[in-house]
Image 1 (cartoon, helix red, strand yellow):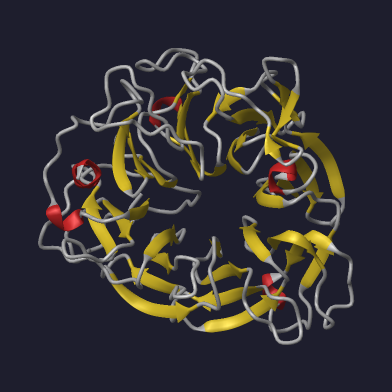
Image 2: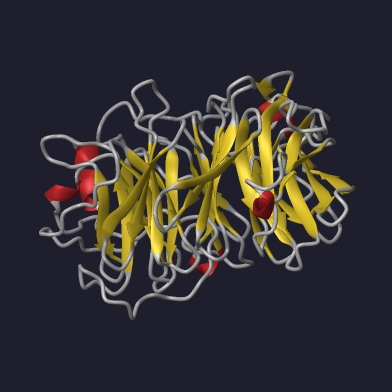
Length: 469
């Protein structure tokens, strides 16, 4: 009951998420009449809630009670906003046999679903072309006749129609460069392309040319030399890709940042994402990153011999494992910090910079400390999958300069969305929607703990995205 109330109370708040630029659509007429909106995905239908996309006013955290959610499949979750802010893509799927695996395209102006595409399986990676016309979806389990499972499905955003596909076994993660001329496709296992491709070099990373899809028999080039890549960033001129190698945490050898020349396909410098722990042992980890100029903020959980290897210090749960944050200089291809910055463990796949230099880092399947009762006794440690790092040289609330806070909330972090017109960030954790204020104390919600009660927003929330800024 407490969690239900918390989900309701904190739902009337502010959110945060992944990269996207573009002009504001605040002057566009919307059905709701709300100028600055946050879309919030609710994955559960029950007596008191309806699965769908709820619209929240980003200026005051209010959801109009009369505004029905936008239907977007059985279990809507991950969302991607196009760079021109015209559409929001919503994936509905729970990675089970009964999953509908539906991609819904919502018109942000009319606030209605304009198209649907039934994908061939579950996805965790969708990228959109810079001109906002096309979506590329990685489906690692999609059936391919005569070949190993795994495809990139190409979807026209205007209609939801499939316009092509590229077979890449076990393709899991995608990255698209700034002008949309190249895709990087990353796999979980060492993969070889099908018989229709002449280059049979085993690789974890493949370069795809979108303009050649449906024209060339094989618009894919394998690039060996990577160690379980999970993410990639591009230089402003698109000549260099900085690929995040997961390494040991994903069953490989060592986490690193590997340069890739996007003109020649040649590998450049490889910088290990490794720093010393309190005992002087090297710890390496990177599964998610945030690029800020020449700086990469990287989070991951160090592994050695198949087991987590970084022990937490400075917490009541001294025997717990921790993840780590690494600040990486792309000019020197080396870490800036010399010792490990401990954060929660788990698989880190959410990271976002909020106002006032507060870096929010989210993970799933972390080691949690759950209070023995509700409310917890004074002094009881509570830990979930959210960490907040203060990038400033001055304290922010109780978070010291260069310090890390782990808020007392349980659950996986599935959504982060800074509200740029204010100084708050929406955090979706454990199915609840929280608000954090980046100016006075990162541990506390944005306003007070007591929010306007909105029973129609009870549910299990997954993601949150701003669509007007």
